[in-house]
Length: 125
Image (cartoon, rainbow, N blue to C red; front, side, top):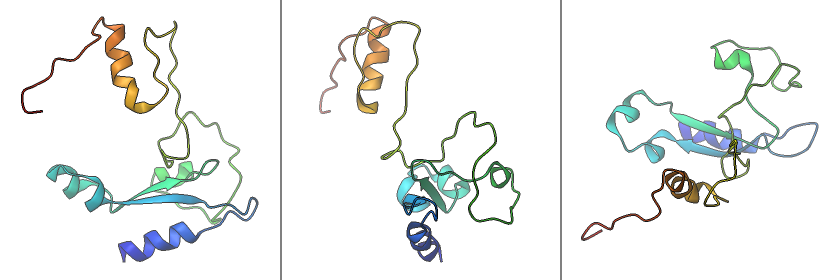
């Protein structure tokens, strides 16, 4: 059932744009490694396409009549997107000492702000 729901979500098309509504579906068992998360995590994590998201009603457990509708509410932020298609941003009050053009470089850039430029290597790793 989880696979079927995931496949149907990926087939869904936004009637206004003709583009996909969902670009990725992440099954719990393939996403979480921690046993505690496996037991309490959602069956599917939905990666919404750029420009789409679930409604505020549904995030609070409510349902709306429409499948699609324009978002006219304030949108303070959301983690409901496909991280591979929707870029994130980092806001700082000053330039970073070390650039972080991708998420993979972010940890190193943040450590550089603390004066840590190199990481000691562990033996065997």
